[in-house]
Amino acid sequence: MKALFVGHSYIDVTFLSNVFPTGDEKAVAQDYAISFGGNAVTAGFCCAKLGISPDILATYADDWLGRMFFDMAIKYGITVHQRKVKESSLSFIMPKDGKRAIVRCRDDNDLHPFPPLNMDGCKALHLDGHQPDAALEYAKICRGKGILTSLDGGAVRSNTEELLNYIDVAVVSELMCEQMNFKPFEMLEYLKGRGVKIGGVTMGSNGFVWYDEQGKVNVLPAFNVPLSLIIDSNGAGDIFHGAYVYSYLSRPDAPWKEHFQFARGASTHAIQHLGNEASLPTLGDIATAMNTFKERPPTQF
Image (cartoon, rainbow, N blue to C red):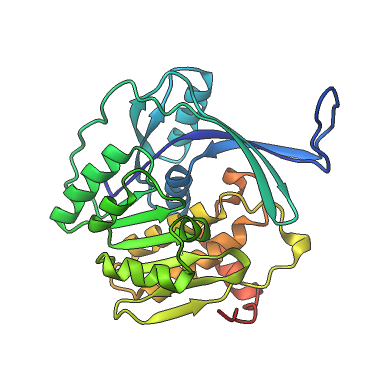
């Protein structure tokens, strides 16, 4: 096992439409995509597309959507460790004007405990806070073994505070900042206080604020992508996470500034495509994004 990603799996149905019907109305979408979904799951698929196929511990139901998900994982060389649920989860996603509306149908009632896994040889663990018991247990194991632990803090979960005690790299969302009544720079100080070695806050078009190995706070501006090129921002943050984990696995001695610059190129590619699978970048795609777009003017905080 090269890396382990732990999260909740979805099948995403993403569609482009100018209207969302209500009542007895009908509408015809301009385009659609069906792909895997879930925060850590999408990050894991991104890592695999870039060249390092991880293991994924995710929810799984023995239905046709579950089998679809399993087939997708096989295509990318991903080993799935199943945590059984009764029904597969679905997300319906409607991107529009750089934003996205989402309806989720989620079954997170686990039928069995999480499976015990041998972590020997693993170099990184990435969590999204779902499956909190498994996340905490494997974070403790990996911290004890000196394995890098990474957290996608998309929102406050049931054991986020405890989990942070075992996290090396925490990249959180503006939503999580709001939930905890922190401004972005206050969140960085909070993460430092919890012993997180590398911490950051993603802010979409406003870029990324983070602190490095020496605790110095930095601002990484977003690339200036014309609105006409932005098709679907959903999953771009997950791809950001998957890309920096891949970059770390490829070059563990490189500074985190380079890992995050690489991840910015990955998410810049992602927002120009519909659906998670089409959004996954190759190494060439990331190089193209990094060489094509200029940085936006730095945001004043």
